[in-house]
Length: 318
Length: 318
Image 1 (cartoon, rainbow over the protein chains, first blue to last red):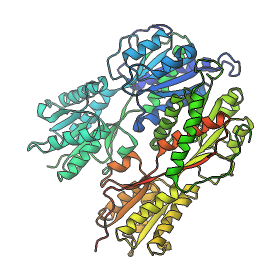
Image 2 (image 1 turned 120 degrees about the vertical axis):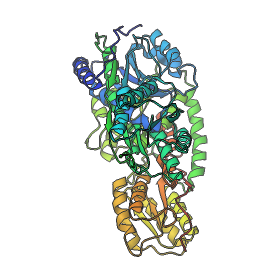
Image 3 (image 1 turned 60 degrees about the horizontal axis):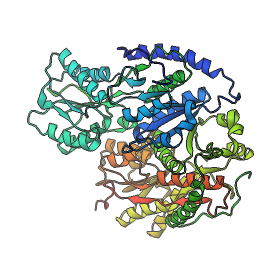
Image 4 (image 1 turned 30 degrees about the vertical axis):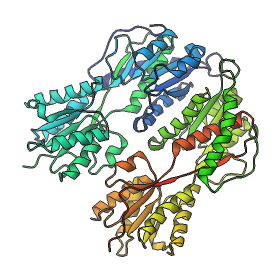
C-alpha cells in the first residue's frame, strides 16, 4: 500500500487500555508533528479529509467534531466530502485528488474499490468503524461492539430475564460482533439462544418497529429485548405502546449507540455508548501519524464502549 | 467592508419567492464561477469555510450537507472549524487566516468582533441565521421566523384554541421574530396576548421542561402551547406526562425547528420546518457569488419555513 506503512494485525481485546496506550503513542507522534513551524510554508497544505458516503445527521456531527479537534491541535485543516451511496467513484478523487496528493489524509467510510483509488494516489487513510472485514494491512478505528453487546445483554440477564430477544441489523461486521456479544452473554447466563426470539432487519426506526410488532405479538414474547441500534429501539417503543406494553414494567429494552435522543425517550433508554467523538479523534490522530511516515505500532484500534443504564430496564414482572 | 460589495438592505417579505429569485440569480453567477477550468491551478485553492461556535449535533450535519453540495457543484473544497463559544478570537484567523486570504469564503456564526477580523483580511463572509441585528451591509441567510411562528399559532387558533401559551427563547433576533409571529397570530384570531401564558427561557430541553411545569401547573393553564424550539417541546412532553396531561387530548403542542426527532416523538410533533440544508445552500452560493466579485443583488435572504402538521395538535376538549 503506497504511502502507508504495512503493520501487523492487532485487534486488541481490551478496547479501553488499547485506547489509552494508543493515545500515548500517537500523542508523541502528534506532538512531533505539531512542532513543525506552522508558518513555514511547505506544510501549510496539510489537510485531513473526511469522506462520508452520506452525512447522517445523528452521527455526522460527533464524528466531525472529533476530527476537527485533533486537526486544530495539529494546525491542519479539515475538509469533508459527502459522496452519496450510489457513486461508483469518488468525485473528489476524480477531480483533484492527484493535485492534492500527499498533503491529504483521509478518514473514510469508503469501500474497497474506492479505497483502491486512495492507495493508487498514495493518500494515507483510516477506515472509520468498518462495516466489512478488512485486509490485515488496512488501518481502522472501530469500537468494542462485541463487548458492548455482551455487557448490555449481561445486564438484562443479571436483572433476572430469561427470555431475552434481539433485533439485529444486516451482516455488517459490527452487527456480527453485536450478535456474538448477545450470544456470549446468554451462554454466560446459562441461557440458550432461541431462534424464535432473534430477528434480523435494517438498523432503522421503521424496521425496528416492524420487527418489534412481530416479536412482541407472540404469545411467548420475550420479557426483554436488545436492539442493535437506538433507532430500532425508537421503533420498538412505538410498537410496545401500540400493544399496550409498558416499559420497563412489561418489557425491558437495552440498545446500542447512545445517540443524544436515547436520553430523551420515555422512559430514557438503557444503551451501549459508542464513543464516536473519541473514535474520530483516534482516527484523525492515526491518519496524521501515518501521514508523517512514522512507524505506527497500532493501526487497528477498537475504542471502548460503555453501558449507560437508564430507566428502560428493570427486573421482569413476577 | 473590504472585499465584499456593499449592497442595499433587502429583507424581503416572501421568503419563498425570495429564495426562488435568489436561486436563479445566484445560479447564473455560480455557473459562471463553475466555468473556470478546475485544473487551471490558480483557482484550486478556493475553499468555502464554515465557522461554527460549536458543532451542535442536531443542526450541524444538515448545515454542513447544504454547504458541501454547493461546494462540490462548484469544485471548491469545504473546510470547517469549531471555535468554542468562549474564544475571544478565532484560532483560525490568528494562525493562518492571512495566509489563506482571498481564497477563503466563510459561512459563519461569528459575532461582530470576530467578523471584524474577517473584514480586515478581505475574506468574504455570510452570516448564517444571525442571532443579532446586523448592520445593513452584512450579508446573511436566515429563515422566515416570523411567518413560521404566525402559521403555527394560527393553526392552533384555527383549531379553536383560545388560551394559547408560548415558551420562548432568549432575546436572539430569531426568537424576537418568533414571539412577534405568535403575537400577530393571536391578534388575527381576535385574542389578546396574556402575560401569564408567556414564559421566556433558554431553548433547551431542560428549560422547556421547567417552564412547562410552571405553565401547566396553573389552574387556568393553556389548552395549547407554542414552543420556540423542538428541544423545549421535548421537555414540555415530559412535563405533560408527569402532570397526567395527554397530548393532544388535554393539550395541543406546536413547535419550531422540525429536527428529525420531532417525527419520532409520541405523539409526533407539529412543528415549523426550518430548512437548514436549503439555508446552507443559499449561504454557500451567496459566499461564492461575493467571492467572485460579482454585484450580487440580494445579500440578505430569508428562506421560507413551512408548517408540518403531525399528531400533537387537535381541537380543544369541549
